[in-house]
Length: 329
Image (cartoon, rainbow, N blue to C red; front, side, top):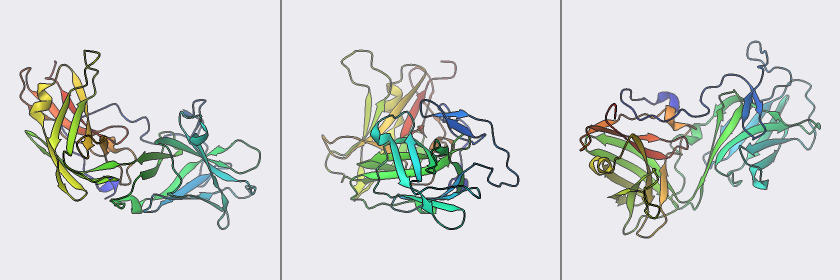
């Protein structure tokens, strides 16, 4: 299912600050911290590529690889050392830049391939083209993305480490990738809401649920005492192979509410004593889930009054729950 075909629930919904990148506006250049800053937009007539502008189409494969096909302005010189350059924002280590050979692929076209076997650390990666002409790498503009193979992607359940890369247009109209690298990984599926709690179904990759497996909701707030752990609410798993289901009761979350609007992060512990795994939704073609998947916050009775509780996806596409106090509280 693509983003355009999903329905968004309106009404009382769980909200967080908007993603730093949502709708493309103008072109941008890289800032000193590897982020973006606005730049004067180039004039284009009829959607044509402006002089000096490089536009990249992206094709995703089901294994997690990406192919970049660049449209270069006529007469653009390209050296044998040309490369597509990916730079992770905020990173300055040797693993925060990846160079992919960029070669001819027909008249006016260049191609680079990011195989699924090349690991990208989690984060946002800006895309550039280095044409080997001695100039600084130029920021790429987004073209057409063919991400059909990412829709309802189902990697092998026994995979040890899961890599996900989704190309998207930044708010300044440049091409970037959102990357996740996780193992094991708990993929969130259907979420069913009821007045007394929510039921989450999903699939576990890189691990097998065993005795003592459970879901955990952890309060994100810092506990008052220095040696105490954040509040945790658990729910047992119903398991069918790699598939899991759990129901998280709202009443227990409401019993821990203290003030304001409190987020809880959702984890899955595959077995008693095993390392917990963050529950997230990564296996589709949507880079930022927050603006696509919205869920209503339902009223839950509590000593302090009627709280409102509901799930949402964070800026990293991790599944969370927000417990909000009574209106005006």
